[in-house]
Image (cartoon, rainbow, N blue to C red; front, side, top):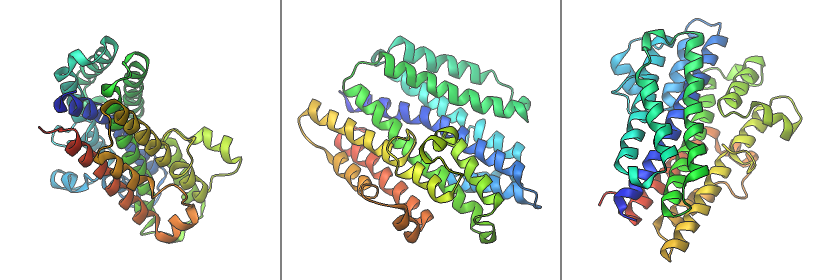
Length: 315
């Protein structure tokens, strides 16, 4: 496969997954803001979401106040924000159009129709319940594309690059969703373990679509320790870090079989895996949850760099 085609398929999957996860981040920031009764609390929660997405500095250049309206418009519709849902869907469609002949009809139609629907939305009407409905729609769009890919795409190197892109992005965003908890509690350590703390952790679970399945695994009330464990180290949880890294490794093995040898991506993925396999929440919390997640994100980013080098993405 040509490096340019591999690059387009990889980033196509990343942008679809990123659109979904930006919606997830915005939803948890929005719901946290509704639970805050302290003056300035809503802005604090929304800023924590922007920090987790690493777009807080760009936001501050354009807006003086982080309220629901300004943040939702920036995260959903702002073309100057490369991580906005609009930017992600447009980038996904552009990549798809470039490799149109490599996609199935179902994959292309799911993306193209999603873009046309989104482009027809009036940003001024996305407030209150309509904002929540739009965030749900973005997640549905992502699921629709993933369903088309898994149901119709030939299991070859194109499929492998698509899967790696999806799970590199998913691991990155699950780590960022978890890191919101750090940003929220950092200035208010007196809240740790209280009702507000548990409520915020519950919203983190909801952001990862793990609210109900958590109960099946732990049969217990919501505890920060268990929730972090669920989203980091539980291999049966499909948005956990270890689940995503497992898929990255398996699809890299698929590329090894297709091309007849290991590439730099294997070493980069092994470096990420080493942070998770055999680890425990005792050691992670002792090290520092924020520090662990920051290091994980950095190592996970190196997988993309290694793939670009190994498969001539930019050649």
